[in-house]
Image (cartoon, rainbow, N blue to C red; front, side):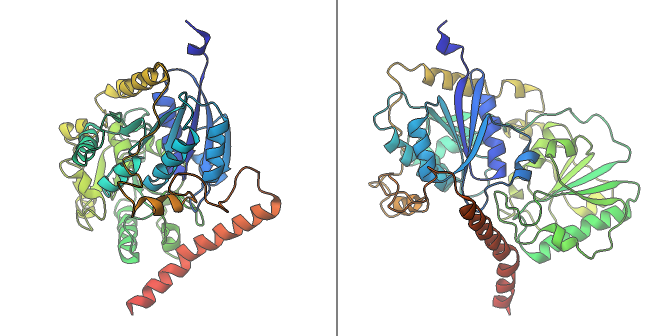
Length: 435
């Protein structure tokens, strides 16, 4: 066996938020055919994770740095990676695919490019998929998603061969075998679902009411981020802010931390539509997806129709415990039946084959080009300071040098101003517009 087949693979992960960093790094570890050296790149933007968020995610890289799009493309030109995982929003993936196509246009030995989705795909299915087209592997987290992904690509005449069925990479942990003492109910909050103050206040009030109705239980509000931090989605009305000044019962607490560790002590997971529901179902933790605000596409809980998990707070207060449908679980890649160990075998085998392809890999070929989408693609690329041919625009932010102390201070100030605008100014303006 040649030495090249036994030495660790060099893998890069480019992520734009804490959640996608978690997905990208865990995916890299799951799909790599052998041991890896992992280099992390955080795309500079509004949701670039803080040190605390990175620590809470609980996954480590051999190196980690913040980059702009232009700086990342430069690194990809200079560094000899074997596999690249793009853990970005759809527009970011598309921009990188075009930028990388230009960077690697004379390189047959380019890395294998992998992308996919962090969790449940319940909105912008076609838009998001076509923006991801062009990667060597587009990962689908379930059998249902794989079928939907292929149907979209084939429906527009695009090659669907990159679609590869896997599972969510962060499933794991010991299965729930019995109730804890005290019995613990956890509400998994989401940054942007629901959106309005009325709806979020309602959910907080019902959670507090549940704690009062059941003083023998521990009731936890599991939060995604601390005030001022951003996640994958913008949070204009943090629950921490809504809870200020409330007379909270002694058995009610706000908690942070790794979701897996919280699930270790959870006896009932309640959410509107968080991916945490799938983590809980994988571990056989009783799980309720709320219907109080309706079952609607805007909430994402429509994804759970047929799951057996839909329930209201009134039902939960009265003691109801949803029982999931095993057929639904199987189609969603939850793998509560023990099949999780083999869920990534196909992806690993495909990457191994691509790494061994005689003569290297062909150029990246996204569906969107200046010919197929001349009114759409330039705008997508321009948001990342790239020209329609994938080259950095004149004056594009350059991450070739580490920012000096003044630039770091200015950047932190700008991010703080942005977050203040999102969480304080924007809601005020919206309320004024409703008068």
